[in-house]
Length: 215
Ligand code: DX5
Ligand code: ZN
Image (tube, rainbow, N blue to C red; front, side):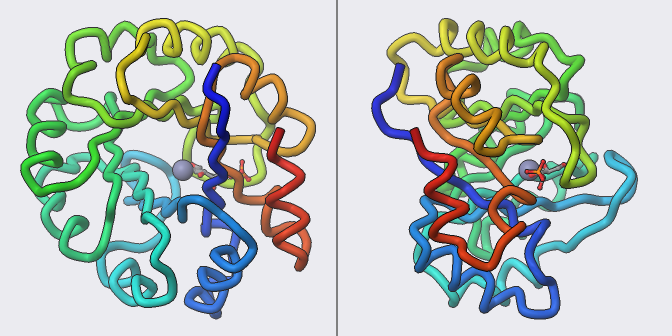
């Protein structure tokens, strides 16, 4: 099990009217990544924001932007997300048709490449692209909204992905329903990056809400 756990607050639960200040606040509170949920109203039943908003908040922190693309197709706009300031670009295995090509495109843009798996998607889809990956994002809710309950069956998938990764330098991130109660099991299963939206933004004291997730 990795010794350090990173916290990636999801700004989906931030105050959108003050997004820049919210990003600055989670940075000062000690977050490791800024998790940015891009939704297209088609791949998921919700619509958020795109490259313009990412570019607008980029000056508010130097922390890595962890961009979670819940859009289908993703390939036509990968370069726009790279140009807007993404550091990690994660596509869904269920989107587009050619996952291997998406991952090659992201790395060719000079960014870290991630793949996300919906709860019903088996981890075997990443078996033949492991060497193109910098991050695997296991969804522990059905994507689209914050504030949903953690799906316990995903713990077994997290354990399996951790075994598949072996000693490769690939991060294992978990997203959905992660809070102070569920985090210990997620970490014990092998995750090293925790995404948390409602758990971080539920209270104004982000130092406290972020630290509550750390082991
Ligand atoms: C949902 C997003 C998540 C969301 C998590 O589709 O991918 O990042 O913000 O929200 P919580 O932590 O509240 O479950
Ligand atoms: Zn997310």
